[in-house]
Structures are given as structure tokens and as C-alpha cells.
Image 1 (cartoon, rainbow, N blue to C red):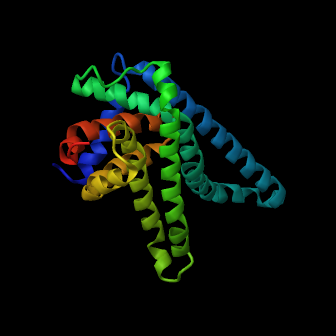
Image 2: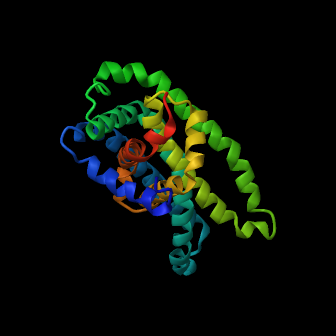
Image 3: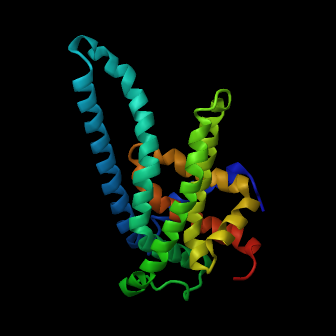
Length: 245
């Protein structure tokens, strides 16, 4: 198996192509709308907060500083959006993402017994998918404090942005591959174990999703593309290496 960064990255493009396939598009609508609403609310709220702060903190003769402060705001807001609103969107959309993953796997494998995709089956999956999302949030919480400490240690803080970037890429790969692997009976521990064997593949895929999360308009598609791309990655690369579940 190609365990390299570029192979994983390429599955983001495959995810884009998959979400527009006939029979798949209707499963994309709800995850897309959830992502659209939450990202739009995050951008609106963040811009409003920044504008209010600048209006009350900068005197009129320093208005030119807005152009210097705004890039810092954009970077900061991007981090906040990723670690709050993105995770919130995935938590809300989890049952629908699971159904989308099942439909993508059906499309790729040709196995018609994988997915039903009706509202009753989605409703039955809600407790399972929500619990799975909470486990991922707990895993994230265990790593946040050590990663934040890196920023305040002299010398070590130089590598802190790199560590955050790698962890973000890893977390996104784990977030989205959880849907196809969870649908196939994998526990969270088993998912982590499998991905650790193919870190470069995971980092490549997570890096691609991280990139489109920061690109306007494309970020609205990040969640369904992540689910579709991760499912294709599972079917074509990881499934045969996973053993029987």
C-alpha cells in the first residue's frame, strides 16, 4: 500500500468527485447545510467581535493599524473555528455523516447490503455516532494541554506551530475515517491503531482537509468531502490491511 503523504492528500480530490455522484448527492445535503450554517455563523460572529474590539480599542488616528491586525485575526479565527465550530458541526452531523459514508461504500464496493440510508436507520444510529464523537473530543482534550504548554517553553515554542499542524492533520484523518471504520465494527482504539501504521497516509489526507477548511467557499464542503474521501481511503487502501471485524 502507498503509505505516503501525497497518496493520502489525493483522496481529498476523490472526495470532491464522489459527493456529486448520482445517488450520493442527496446524502450530502444535510451535512453540507449543517457545515454551511455553522461556518457562516462562526465567520459572522468572529468578524463582529473583531470589529467591535477594534472600534473600542483603537483611536481614530490609528485606524490604519486595522490592516496589520486583520491578518492576525484571520489566523486566530481560523484556529478557533477549527477547534470549536468544526468539531461542533461534526457532532451535530454525525448520524448523517455515517449514512453518507455507508452510501459511498455501497457506491464504491457495489455491495447493496451495506446501506439503507432511510430516516429510521439514521435515527437508530444517533446514540452510537454521538458517543463516538464524544470519544474523539475526549481524545482531543487529552492532547490540547500538552500542545499548549509547548508555546510557553522557551526554545521549544519554535516547534509548537509544527506540532499543532501535525496534530490537526492527524485529528482530521481520525475524525473522518471513524465513519467508515465505525460502520464496519471498529472500536476507536482499533481505528487509532490502524491509522498509526499508516501515519503518512493519514497526515496527507488530514492535511488536505485542513487546507480546504481554511479556503473560503471550499470550507463549506469540507465535512462531506472529508467523509467521502475517508470512505474511499478505507475501501481502497485500509480495508484489506485491517483484518476481519
